[in-house]
Image 1 (tube, rainbow, N blue to C red):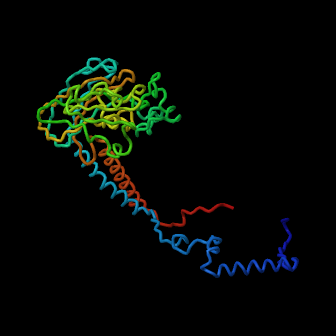
Image 2 (image 1 turned 180 degrees about the vertical axis):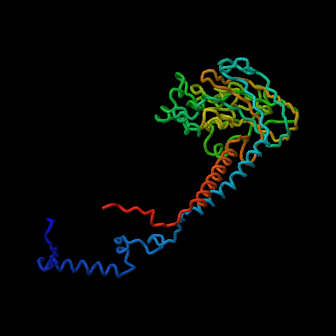
Length: 408
C-alpha cells in the first residue's frame, strides 16, 4: 500500500445465494441434505458405511497412541556410549579368543601361478590327476569337523552367471520356455543335443573328487545341502525311473529294451540298478556330463551339485564338501586323495582344501570379534571425550542465548 495513507479493509456481507436460486433448486438441495442426515443417523445402513471416509474411532487411526521421544542431553549420550563400549569390548575379546581355540587346517593344492603344487593340472580340464594331501592335526579336534574346498577369484556373483539357470528344468520339466532358453544360452544346447540342466552354473560344477583315507575316521558326503533345497528345488526329470536288480549279470540286470535307457547297469557299491531317462537319445543329463561326481540315480538331487548351485556372494568362497563326526586326536595325519579335474588357469584362480572346527559363531574368523572390539573402543573414547567436555565446559540445557532469530 502507498505510504502515508490509512487504508481500511472491510469485508463484504455474505451473499444471499439461496435467494438467487429458484424454488426447485433450493427444494432439491434440502431433500439431499435430509436424505444424507437420515443415512448418517442410521448406523445399520450399509450404504452409509460405504460413503463415509471418516476413520474409525481408535487410538491408532486417530493418532492418539502414546509415544516416547528421548531428549538427547549430554548425560544421556555419555551414559549410552559408555554402556555400549563396556558391553562390546569384552564381547569382542571373547569372540576372538573362541576363534583362536578353533583348529583350521588349510592347504592350497592348485593355483594358476604355481605349477609345482601337488595337484596342479596346468589348465587341463578333466585331467583326472590323482594326488595325496596330508594334514597334521596340531590339537585335539571335536566333532562336527567340516571339510571345505575354497575357490579364489571365481565370480559366481556375476549377473550373467547367476541368472544362467532354468529352475523349472531343475524341478523336472522337460520343456523349456524361450526366456529360460535365453538365460541359459549358449549352454542350453550342444548342436542337436539338449543340456539338462542348462546354464553356466550347472555346467561349471566343481568336479574334483576328494576322499579321506583313514581306517577309523570317515568323511560323510550327505547332509551338506540345505534341506529346503532338497525338498522343493530339485527333482529328477519327469518320467525318470530306476529299480535295483537281484544281481549284476546280464540275465538278472539287463538294460535291453525300450523301457530302460542305460547302456549298462549302475553299481552303487552294494547292488546294481537299471534306470530310464526320457529323451535320452538327444539329451545330455548331469550324470553324463560329470560321471565322476554325479550318479545316474541321483542326477540333479546330488548334494555336491545342490551346494554348488547356491552361488557365493564374493569371488573368494568356501563350499562344504563333507563332514567328520569322530573326534580327532592331536598328531593325527589326515590323508586326502584328490582327483583334480577342475582347472583354475583360465580365470587366474586357486583351489584349497580346508579342515576346520566350528562354534556358535561359525568357523575360524577374526572379523566379528574385531568388529565388536573396534565399535566398543570407539564408543568408550567418545564417552570419555564427551564426559570431559561436559565436565570442563558444561552447557545449560535450553539456554536461550543459543537461540538465533531471523533478522528483519
